[in-house]
Image 1: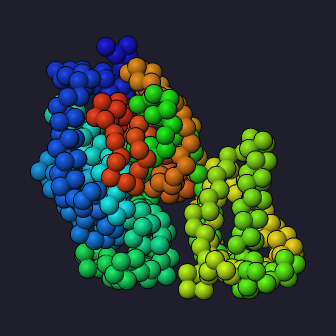
Image 2 (image 1 turned 135 degrees about the vertical axis):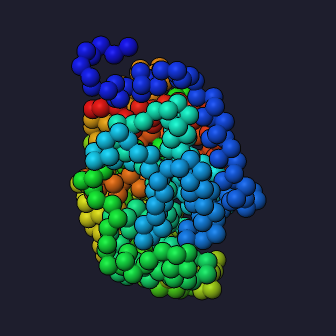
Image 3 (image 1 turned 180 degrees about the horizontal axis):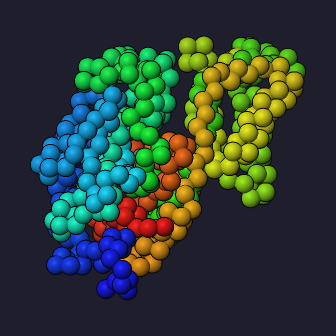
Length: 442
Ligand SMILES: [Zn+2]
């Protein structure tokens, strides 16, 4: 019962609002709907042994069609923007207030799992289904966004859909080519009925000031929640990154027996030195309490020219450095260049780090984080706060100044593989929190 004697609708406390003639916090019917949706998406995207929902391709298209069809069946408002992101809106009592948005991406990596991305869209639709079932009307409009092309597996670009929605894609971004068939992003977008030229002009569909909040539910991609035995996490920050995807060490090929050490320019030893030096820099950063991860995901000699009896004259490699702290990223970027220069001076091996790409760290909004913690306490859901190592569309929303927060759901076996494992019990806990996060006051 509300303690307020005024006429203010008790819209801000979902459990109160939904307790009139409904089933309180019993989510069983809603979970059945969610399971049906997950099963449908899995059938549509089946690519044994996993799931493939290719960005701006048939897989993603089928997933979008399924969500749009359900929204139309429910008489909700369905819109798409020039980049074909899908927006399903549940009208609120006050249609002029800023909208509360949720959602995530519907694309997947090739042969990935069914939950990465899709869980956030299914969650939003499940909450809407529950409201329809209970005759609940939220205080303000709520929108589920099914974001296009978040995964950079298909196009060499992250967050395509959410960037396009805010008018953040640059002209040349539309000309990147898909990794499998080489068609451009613009061509693929156009073929599906989108308007790439509007996207190219930077025309925004979303206005940050019109969005009251963005709450994204996503499976956890690391092992933390499993290790701690907790169903959900509340994200504090999303790590930013800088990457050298195509770096090279250039030395000289020589006979492995005849070349004397002082004369060698061994590109592999040079990269090995770089790795160990940065490993020590990582130790130092950790000792200072900094957040940092460093990955050399690819280190390779040229299979045509390298052999066991040759000093390797060329190594190509990648460096991916991530942190939630902008100054740590800047410092490490300088450190990478310093270390390369030191190694060049010592071994005579040159480095060409190639094109550098960046993404900014994003802090989740403090008041929303506090609200979700409050919601977790209210419903007795064990939760912890944690940083997100992986990037998400939420980083784009936060970067635009939209109050943003993420809910992570416990998931075994990581993500981007067919073995992603989220239980519906954990999903139910996250749904409760999502509903709370969509309509609570803060
Ligand atoms: Zn994802």
